[in-house]
Image (cartoon, rainbow, N blue to C red; front, side, top):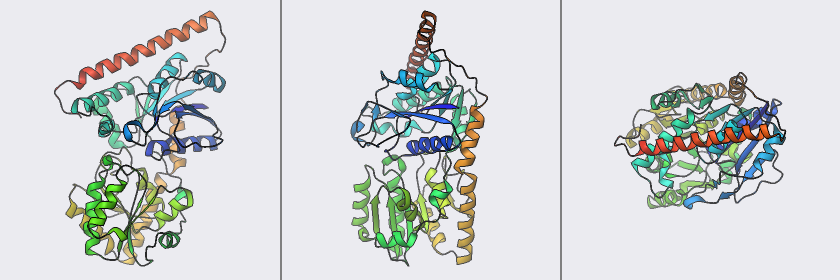
Length: 424
């Protein structure tokens, strides 16, 4: 099967969508399928990329670490002609997502859409952020989903939310899987030594983009409160983002700067070792569609303390493989960390074993197999590559139809944005 994935964010950018696309593409290729990834250019270059088409993009959009792809590229059509796709898979509803719709319609191919993101939680990156803008992006994503042949939801919570918002096309739960081998067998002692963390310390950890939508201010305050009660507790924060400096200042103001460790973005062995150095993984985001880092931590045998929210509730089982907290309350979070710290060695071993079992349920092999099963029955069409007048006319007709669908969807979303109703 020849699969084209179009995504507005991809490696070397470190984020959930980029990692998801790379993980699925890798597993599909391992099984003998061909995958072409269409993604924006980033300032950092990856040498000798295979089967990746880079689209010109505006770098560091609005001061963020995102690249905003320009949704038109003259050489993409030629690349697609050579590749002969069977499936078009969009990972966003806008920019390259609209390109995906045009390609699917022009070539009469099935369009699959993964609803990775609660876009209304990210509108603060746009200068005109407002409740109207939040309604607009919700409606735009919903209407885009209804133009697809099939919608992938990364979790049951998101599948239910999409149905509530009016998605009528088939929705399948397809989480991003975790490569178990990639996160097991890390050397936690080596990581502690590298970051000057005592081997006897109680280490709380976090990994991800350091950005406002991740609810990091709440998390940092709760962890700092706990650390002030326990002088042997250290906090290992892996990742980069606009809130990195703010986190450093918060811990320094509490006199905890020496016990905060921020090595930046880690990959490969360094990332695996960092997970293994943790006694507990802490997570407070309520903006996720799937908590990928939660399954990664569990694959390393690390229990998780998280808020009950989309993505987390499908992974964390309270008292079994971690703690799942019903409300965003700092005292409750500190109490959960205290519970984790006071576990007996035997109880902790059971907790870690359950974390590993949970990760196995979310293995990349299982999740990619599920996605391929869903791809398989979708209708395929082998579009003729001849230059006949008829073929050119049919492509143009289909392209005009796709453009009309895009304009109609944007217009309807704009109308919904100015209704005096709260975002759903």
